Image (tube, rainbow, N blue to C red; front, side):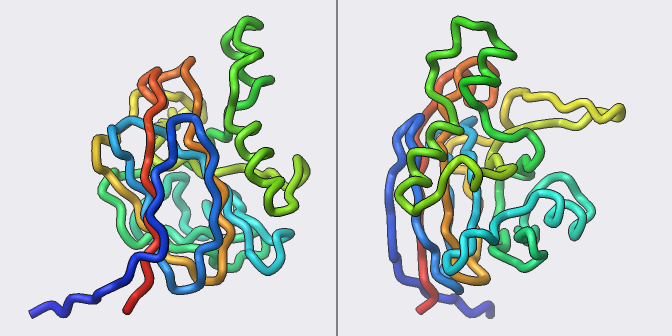
Length: 208
C-alpha cells in the first residue's frame, strides 16, 4: 500500500488574466500552477530569495538535463548551476524555456505598430519585480509554463496552439527559498493563449 503524504495549504490565489503575481516559496514547499480554463501561457522567472543576483538560467537548466523542454523531473537551475526548484508533477506534457517573454517592443516588431500600446509580460515583470527591488537589468530568459513552442529541425521556433487544457497543472518543489515572479501572459496576437487570456490558480503547500 502506498503511503499518503499530507500537506497544508500555505497560499491559494487566483491570478486574473493578464495580471502579474509573485511570492517567496520556502524550501521544501511546493508551488502548483493550475491552468483553469486551458491554453493559457504563464511566464515565470525564479530568483534565490536571499540573493536575487542568483536567478533562473535557461542555459544551465537545458545543458544539465540535455533537453530544451521542461516536464516532470526537470531541475530548474540558477546561473551558478544550483537547483532552485524541481518539477515534481506535470500532467500537461512539456513546457517552454526558449521562447522568452512578450514585450511592447517585440509586439510592435512581430505584429505591427498598432500593437505598441498593448500590455505585455515584460511590463508585468517590471511592475511586480519592483516590489522586491528588481529592475530591468534583473530580467532574464524566462520559463513559459503551458506554452507550446516546437523546435524545427533547422532550429526555428514556432508558437502554436497549446497542448494544455482546463485543470492541467505543474508542481514545483522549492530546493531553497525561491522568489517566484509570474506574468499571466496578456498576449493576444499569437495562439499561446488561444487569443484570449484567462486566469490561473497558484497553490503553495507544505508537507505536514
